[in-house]
Length: 412
Image (cartoon, rainbow, N blue to C red; front, side, top):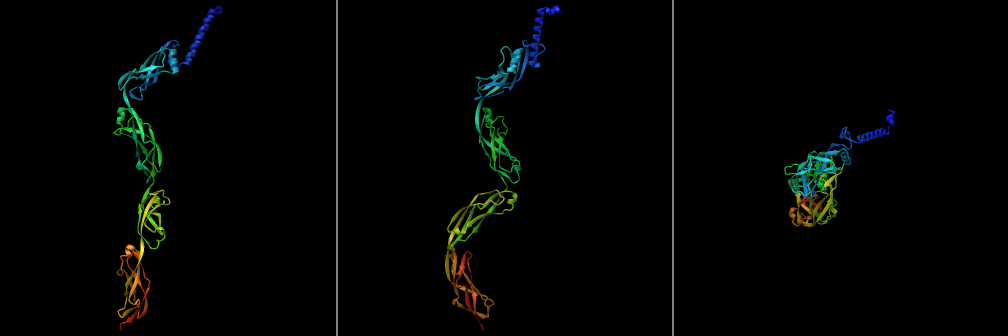
């Protein structure tokens, strides 16, 4: 044994063997165990697979749409293990389909690879794919908004016309597919809503049979604002007159437009309202035909009143005074045993002033006015009796002589 150890050639051989074993051990530790067989040394030849390799396509994507290209393929590598491991570590490989120069049509095209050492044999699986190249078309479509579950909003609340931040979208795709688009629509769910909201919603394209098409608009989402209004009630508008008309002026017509208002608010508030009040017209400022625009007040507890203003049209007429003389005094309640003699006025006629619209006053005469005295229960002798006058309802009557002086005389 000592002699063997003294031989330097034997020692060199042992050192070389140890170095080789150390090299192999280090390389085995740095490589995945699944890729090497027990005898797969770095310089040896082996086979390995690269699965789920994404496929890129070289084509004019502004002019064409390509369908039928597989998303992933498997690459099988054969060659020196060191080359295979280097390829896997660098990850510069890819699978692709070269459609440069192809036009519209159907083709059986090979799947290729790149980024792999020329010293490796590579197999692509699948090796070919049947693809379709179609003309690419871009078209603009208006976006429709449709409500869902509108009947499931909170009780009494309603949704108004929606507003949308993007009214149109662009859709790019194969000409045949674009021609199938009947409309572009988005749906907004109103379930449980009780206030105005803005929602970001997805936009979809549909054919004439209401089938959703597998094509994405640009933009693919839009913001839709849904105005939500509370319970409402329509009530008449009441006009309150304050102040007094100037002397000699009378109102012939007072019209309010519109005559009704819609009040929004909680149901318990609306239940207590039968009319909208708070509209006041100051008669002291009315001297001629006038049109007023007055604001409507929001009742306590309510939220909105529509309209916000009303138009009030007032037509007036100047008043006129007319004196009607020779209005006969009629006697009521005279006992059959008595005669009556007028002492003042001696002729038994009085003058009555009529005040009112000129169109009415000018048509009146004494026969339309009644002047009465009531002598019921009066006994023989002289008496002052109150004069009562009456006439049409739309005029005012005035009489300067408030009493008539009469004498009752016994017939016997």
